[in-house]
Length: 226
Image 1 (cartoon, rainbow, N blue to C red):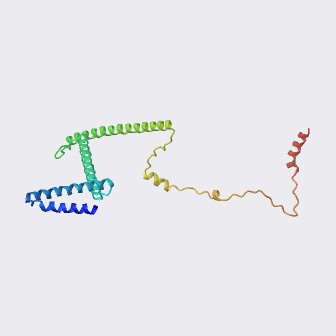
Image 2: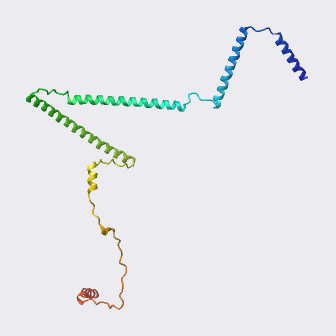
Image 3: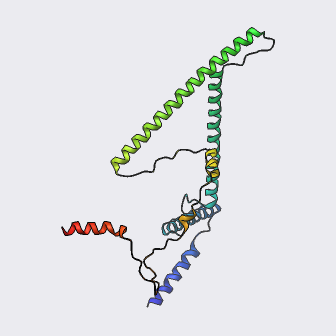
């Protein structure tokens, strides 16, 4: 019965298909477009399912090539920033030098009095700059001392000991220390031997001590008996 129904269905489908009118070019184009859209939707759904399962490539994934390009861009950006910082420091240094030293004087063709005046001005300026330098160095030393004191107080409160900063030693002092000759004590390297035993010589009679040596002992014994 089942085979009979299946055969009837196929026969009716063949009759229906044979009775269909012939499709025009426009209808064929629309049908092909429809099938193409269905295939595109099916492909997108398959890609989405693969991406969920982890089988496809993740969106925005950093490949080695992209990482390499990113590192190159970062290095280039850092180099540009460093160059700008160096240029800024150089400009600031030139500005400070121009403010402190002033513009160079033209001494071509100047007489002795003009040269002496110029030298006095430069000498006075040098003295002022040395004074400012000393004041700045003194201020830096005071701040370093204050920082060390505060650091010690903080470490005491925390209960931790931090090794203090060591002073810088010049190369000349190191060479001077190397050239100092150290005295070598040979006796300190000798092995010490304890004398815990005595050798008795056979046949040797004991030597009696003189009376003057025993006098002190006899007087002490007599006083003890009294």
